[in-house]
Length: 312
Image (cartoon, rainbow, N blue to C red; front, side, top):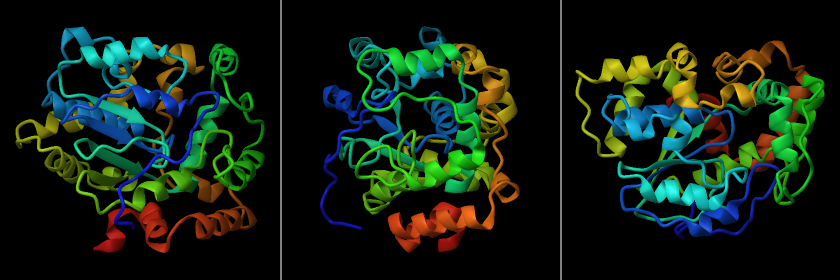
């Protein structure tokens, strides 16, 4: 934990990321930024926030093209920056964006609310393995051949054990030591954890969402200063269930079938934890323990593995 305000010290550029695009961002006083490592509950949190912003009502017709156009992803380099900025500026509702950037690569604004979602890294690996194994050929073509790619091309992994060893021991960027071929998972959370004392940063854990969805939605609403009544909460909970989000894949992202071989069935795969226990060997799990000790502070590791209950 530090008393200084966060500063950008790294540039993240890869087959999917270009953090320099955030230099064009002009914040509004009530903006919300959902900051997560990949496969940690990003879309789930985006939909929770959407339901809260619109108080459980259907989104306006002007935004009916999908969650990906309501909640924009600024550093995603495949969409033209000028188009994304025009979309962002045109939004009249309270804006809520997503980012996969660590805090050392994202401009910080005291007037913006940040929601950080974390998940046990071993669960993230299982979800990411499925995610990267099921990209369509067309999506891999976009990743690798859209002009401006920095670094290695991305290709689907062949073996989950080889994928795990690379992911937990190799960094995509020189200042990271895990997360390849995407970005650091542990590094991401630690950069935010160092500033968890700031009043505009909220940490939410994937396991806490699964264990007490109603309580976590109330906590998020309080953080965002959104009045939430008992009457609207059940409809929000129904709308953000895994089954409901699978069924409404076009409303979430009309491009699902272009990106993944089986569309939303792939993207919202199982949503369960602890699958790694039946997959990874003791030797492979030891790699995680070694990396966590290297990258995370003990309190951050405890939270990342168990959620808020470790501090009760």
